[in-house]
Amino acid sequence: MNQDNYAILGLQRGAGKEEIRKAYVKMLRQYTAKGQNDTEEFIRIRKAYEDLLNGITGVEDGPDYQLPDAKNDKGLAQIVEYAAEAMEKHDYANAVNLLQAALVMKPGDPYILYHLTKAQEKNGQKGNAVKTAQNLVIVLPKDKWAHYTLGEAYFRRGWKNKGLPEYEKAFELGLRELSFLANLTDCAHEADRGDLIIAAGKALLNQPTEYTKSTAGDALFIYESAVAEIALTDKQLDERFLSGIISFLEKNIQILDEKGVLVLIGGLLEVENCHFRPENVKRMRELIIKASTSQQPGNNMDFAQARRVFLRDLMFKDDRISTEWKQLATLKDSGIEKEIINEGLNAKEVMDVIRCDANAHLIKQWEDGNTEEYKIVKELYPELLEKECLFLEEYASATSFRKETIYQRIIRKLVRYSEWYPVRFFKDYPEEDPRRNVKETPESAASKRSEGNMEPIVHDKPVIGRNDPCPCGSGKKFKKCCMGKGIYD
Image (cartoon, rainbow, N blue to C red; front, side, top):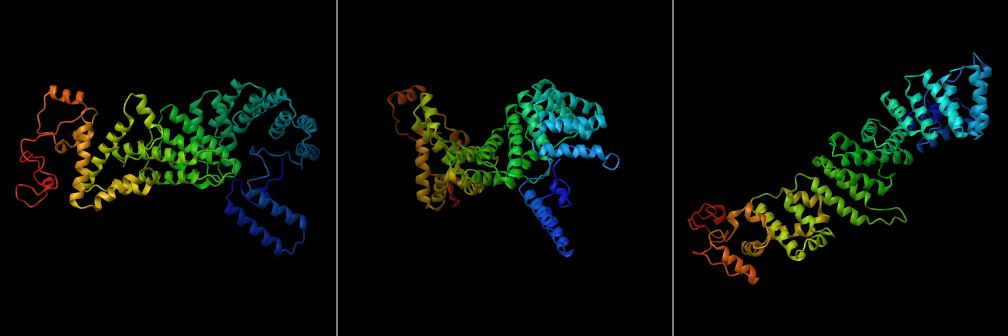
């Protein structure tokens, strides 16, 4: 019942910022060309433009019910106009009386019934508001706004079991306004209707909207709720929904609450049935970095810790990254040492086993020419694995002798650790196990464990280093020629 700022500038509701700017410039040109000197009209145009940019439309979301025609009944139109003025002045009691008088003059008019419901709610007449809204549904049984209005009236009356079905009916009839979807999500939470929560989130995805700080907060709440419900019920988060949420965050991150953004990102990373395409991994990383750089005063959240946790979780969603890199990233968790101690194990030793096992895999992959993972880690996860990347770089630039020294040091550790811990490297690359030709009885192995040290490994023939020249005389390195074929090893 207020002045519509869109109408002042000759725009359709929901117009974007660029459309608003063009319409404003056009109106100013027309105003100047006509030589008008109406200061009030200029102020009205300017205010409409500024309000729209700030998200103030001048009208609430609501139905487009037709105002009673002043030509056919001037008295009725004047009463409705007085009621609108009373609502603007917060004189709700007077507005109710005027709209009731208008309803007597024109029974069953949707415009009057709708605004009378709102006036009665504002005036504390919740029971009467329900009855008026029921009459609106009787007049317009297939109208989405009528069912939404009745649902709101039921909820304000405290009849939640009656309100949600009306919301659901409005949704089925195609109501997709942001404020409605936020209310639907809120009510579905209370009724434990996860299906409606997810449906509201997906419906919002199809609504191209220019958000303000307030409306972006509502959208964030809807998306958070939908993603949390998907994670809780192990449902599939399809790629289109994921991409849509990422696009929403990218466009509105400057006006969104940073904690809320991180909560939504955390929810996305918790969904089990979700795979990230490489381009979405990169977009998520950029969002995590931006959201974990707090610029809000008084924000006591540990954003640095949040960044590490989310980047690690993102890495675990990245199918291009192997288990070895992910294991090394896990070692950076602040709570990992405590978890190992709680299992009754030597934390320092277990962590060294994991590190050596992973490094041995990475060296083997590097020697086999697989450097793609290293490049991805270097680009997307340097905060997590800077030292590990540096280790590989130093290995790559080392001399052959130095490389062999580094590798054999790791192998010796793995041989020693394999007596007490499972070592995956020797299962994946059995030809790299220096004990493969050494037979050992269970009694001698038990004796070594009881003594707490390792006896020197004795080979029945000289051990050929993996980087030594192959004995066959080919001129190639042993590892590139006869190693693993049972000829010399």
